Image 1 (tube, rainbow, N blue to C red):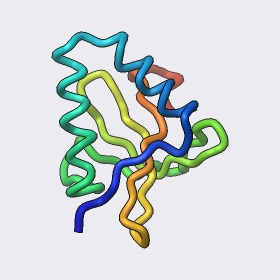
Image 2 (image 1 turned 90 degrees about the horizontal axis):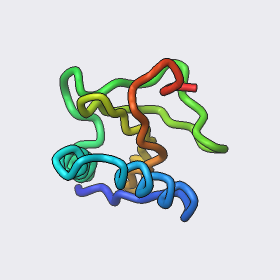
Image 3 (image 1 turned 90 degrees about the vertical axis):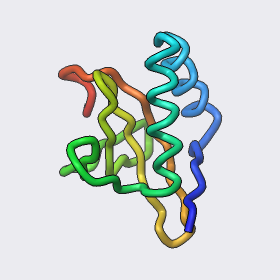
Image 4 (image 1 turned 135 degrees about the vertical axis):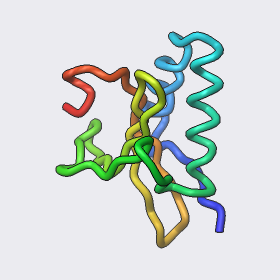
Length: 99
């Protein structure tokens, strides 16, 4: 079954879009494709996917997973019961990515 891709609120959605606007069109396209692929497989195989231990706090939410797309990380959570993927953050890889 296909998962629905959602943002938990408008603030998170706006922050994600703002981060995307800073990127080149090539990077934006790559990230968009990988995020959209989560609707078919929210836990992809390989090095792109990681279960976060411990989970990462993003605002007042908790990210259980991340996908790696070049120098960027998309932090998200999965609700298997309702077939939803909650997109929580887009961050450039740095020491502060998971803080």
